[in-house]
Amino acid sequence: MDPISYTPIGIVHTPFTTPVGMPVQSVAAAGVAGTIELDPQWEEGLKDLETFSHLVLLTHLHQVTSYSLEVVPFLDDRPHGIFATRSPRRPNPIGLSIVRLVRIAGCTLHVEDVDLVDGTPLLDIKPFVPALDNRETERIGWFADRLDRLQSVRAYE
Amino acid sequence: MDPISYTPIGIVHTPFTTPVGMPVQSVAAAGVAGTIELDPQWEEGLKDLETFSHLVLLTHLHQVTSYSLEVVPFLDDRPHGIFATRSPRRPNPIGLSIVRLVRIAGCTLHVEDVDLVDGTPLLDIKPFVPALDNRETERIGWFADRLDRLQSVRAYE
Image 1 (cartoon, rainbow over the protein chains, first blue to last red):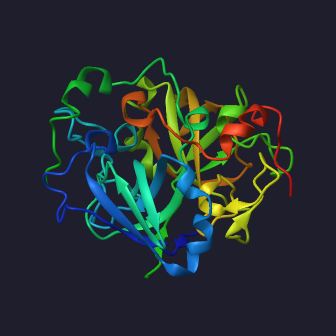
Image 2 (cartoon, rainbow over the protein chains, first blue to last red):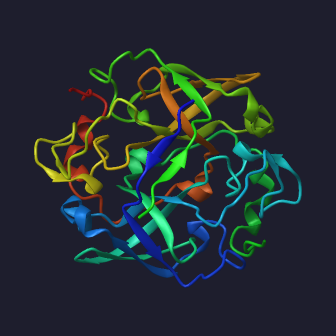
């Protein structure tokens, strides 16, 4: 299949200079503040965004240099197929973070609940809307036994 | 900023040969059946995925040929900044769909709630986990007045 090329629309700045020790999901990063520096060419696209409290960020997890089809995820001690985990070591390392929008000043978005390394390239911003994005599920696989670790586990090498 | 290149991991097959008339979100496509044909080189990555009821699909919206920084989204009749909408006409047209997993047979995933055009390239599959992915929000901008249209509005050119 032909490769697809995307140009980042901005950069995410965070307190984390390395993935080691980071929260493993945005829901485990409550209050962690960061900024998004949007490339000024896209500023017009931010119109009305300040009327949303939460955003979906799609990012390129640039520090991921290799993938693995079977991984032991941070939250577990058993191996699973990569697509059954949220591990960053995926064939296409696209991150999905849900962050709280604090305010927008020009091309700078102040956000909270950031689970990303400083300097992460941003691919897209979408408004988070519960009626579109929330689901009730019947089965959550291995997570069912491991969610109690979510707030305490941190990423490691 | 340097472009980033991803190779699709598979193709999504759906009943929709054109975006015109499609549901505008997966939550408005209840029961619409589709299949994912994963490239066999990634099959090992599916291990344990069948124990999840819902999946996040990140896709390349290949029929989008241009972007617009201000759009009138399908659900509204007023213009908004592209990042304050879920319109496909984005600088990087990456789709986020939440689908129901019915069953997996080899490299074929049978899914429901599909809001994608037949032949859409697939970039990533993540397991949907409410404790990670659901949020309560304070503000949903213009959607607050327009969600009543969600199940009836269909995409147009």
